[in-house]
Image: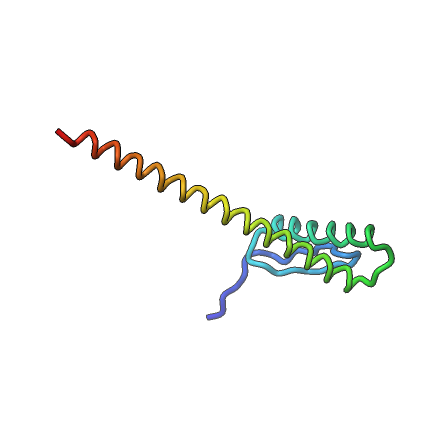
Length: 103
């Protein structure tokens, strides 16, 4: 039996064009993502000036991807720092409890 999507499609405006999107997420989330992309395209068009829509979309995709990669790297650095701190705390705790056990 085919699975039906109970989430209705949502129409968003990106780069001056309407797009109907079907997704397995809340329509508000789809709208938020579309707004982010539309803003980035508008920003690029403002910086570059007259540019073809598909080229602005490509530059927006590259810019958003760069932003994502930077955020992933920052998250990884934060995770690594947290792991190091937890390991240091564990060593201190183990040392403190082993000292308490000595006669």
